Length: 275
Ligand SMILES: O=C(O)CCC(=O)C(=O)O
Ligand SMILES: [Fe+2]
Image 1 (cartoon, rainbow, N blue to C red):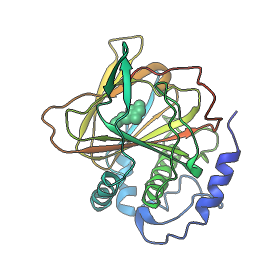
Image 2 (image 1 turned 180 degrees about the horizontal axis):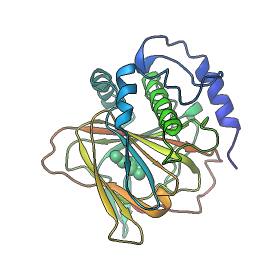
Image 3 (image 1 turned 135 degrees about the vertical axis):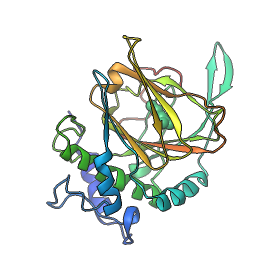
Image 4 (image 1 turned 30 degrees about the horizontal axis):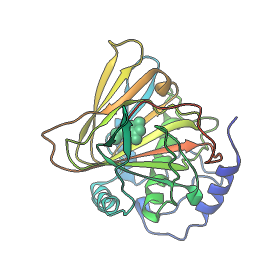
């Protein structure tokens, strides 16, 4: 069963945001009787481009890719704001008792600044979303709902499409030497689709079937793009970002997620593969 409480609280708070400028920065909640797929809160140039949404042909997965959900100007502004965040950290992990540093920097944001997403044996309590990140989230939600309403070949949103993302994991890849190992985002606390937005350098993204090793796909995630992983994708596939030595520019990826709130002190029953 999906929790009603965090979404009810989130909708109320977001509806009262004071921001009133154009585009992604505008506060235009999707509720209040508007169709979740109407697309009226998406700039026309982006809305028309949503026709380029591509379903990635993988058995047992619902993966969609949209090359551009932010204008170039928005992407440039957002990448600068994201890079300037003070929260970036390179977490440590242990292999056979030896401490290593993760290859990329990450940080976490959540509604109310208190949701904990535990993975790789670590608690990750998300800080409150900064305003510009809320604007990014609103655009992502509007696009995801729009796609879900338009497409008949993929079921993206749970229930009536009125879900909301309450957590964001941000990853910063300084250059092509930074990578993310193959893993699944299949923790029990997660539900609904994962919406992944990329800013900066284009990087390869690999999806590989967990059991049928012959099923593998590579997608290029470009600046301002959206990748949605829904349905059984995490159950059947691993994904990762391999090194690309020739890439010298930075890339920042945000994964917007829905997590069930729980007591952060409770140990998780499931561990994720090393990332
Ligand atoms: O950087 C990416 O594109 C993937 C990020 C990811 O898979 C994750 O944060 O779990
Ligand atoms: Fe992931």
